[in-house]
Image 1 (cartoon, rainbow, N blue to C red):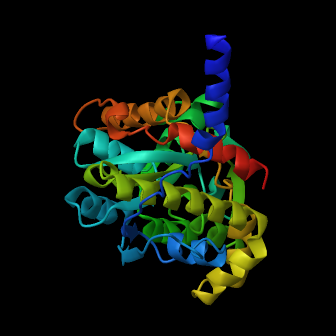
Image 2: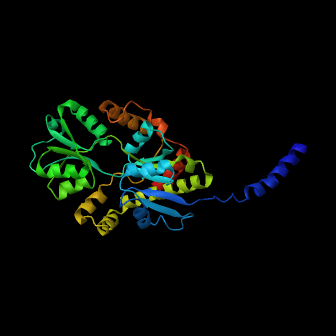
Image 3: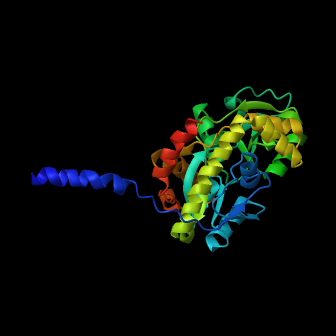
Amino acid sequence: MFKTSAALALGAIAPLVSAQPRPAVKYAKLRFGVPSALAADLRMKLAGQLQDLPFEIEWSRFPTSPAALEALASGAIDMTAGGDGNVIALATRPRKAVACSAYANILFHEIVVPKGSDIQNVAGLKGKRVSLVKGAGFEYKLRYMLEESGLKWEDIKPVYLSPPDGMSAFINGSVDAWAIWDPSAAVAEIRHGGRQLAVPARPAYNFHYANRDSLDDPAREASILEFIKRDLRSHAWVKAHPDQWAAAQVGAGLDAEVSRLVARRTPGGGEPSLIAGPVFEELQGIADVFAESGYIPSKVDVKTAFDARFNTPLQAFAATLQRG
């Protein structure tokens, strides 16, 4: 009888326990570093992801992603976003900044050749001058593409140029091919008659980066996670609304036809990736190539540049994103 009574008593109070409201999540003001003109702030606004935001965002603009990373490491901002080069930089010189989420690449990459070129495939790059950005993750993918076509790195003549200088070289014919990403790739095709030669098949990632101290503050940590979810939803919106995104880019001063092409071939739709094996493998491959090429002084372990605390909540979030 005692056990039954006890069970009944527990059953009677269980609903009362479960009915207790969860403690309200506390948020804090978030300082986000925007490394380009058409980045998170505009995209999130267009996608409606800044509505009913439970915290204030202070946007700071930076000319480049490395500049934003430096501000992040110093504690001047709480968060930024960018490509894989930042991961290598953090692994090379550990600072108070980490990559805290990974998601599908949002920029289309390709090898483009000038109008009238007789190069028909990657194997045709043998002995050719190929322009690329020094220290960019695309070099790793280019090496892989060459290997798949039976070539070695030594079989091509790499020409390291910034995107603006690469465009000039492409236009004046001083290079035979250009390994580049949008919007430069789209401009090369639409405005200068370029032809797409090949697109890398290997996965590519973008990352959200956060200051370690900000992550360790519960209120800022909550704001960072909420921001990541909303930012990823905005990427999904871009994928689903390319024409609206293109119109926004035109409003920011970009060419209409180029903007439409960039928007329509945006590869990623905000799909988060676990900070785990595949991401580590891809980034470690890039880091190893950088070490072999002398871009960084020695080999590094890229895992030191990551914080995987958001893996579980973002995995659950991914399911809601897929359901739309």
